[in-house]
Length: 101
Ligand SMILES: N[C@@H](CCC(=O)N[C@@H](CS)C(=O)NCC(=O)O)C(=O)O
Image: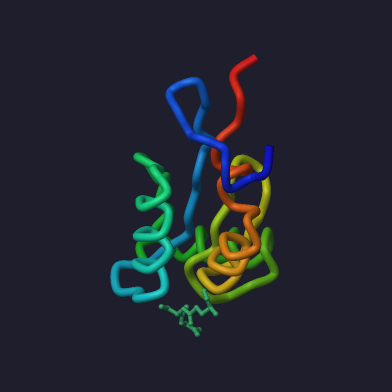
């Protein structure tokens, strides 16, 4: 079966999505919209503008200084551009939804 024929249903479990973000961040909003449109219901947001130590944590973990920085489970995806590129390449939904055992 090709990826485009896969139907995402209740039999699939959703990955944990984490996003380093700030209060005003158009790229974060774009990322959130894309993820929500895919069916993600919950995003664990880490507000780096509220806590300088969290921005340092983000920079040390990702090597990046811009928000958003997105993780799907333990995999660092990058920012919105990378998230979108992953989606266009057909790689986002397989990361978000996994078959139940
Ligand atoms: N190409 C990046 C751009 C991200 C970006 O520019 N984010 C802004 C906030 S919306 C930012 O972090 N600006 C602060 C900076 O550039 O240091 C992406 O797609 O995520």
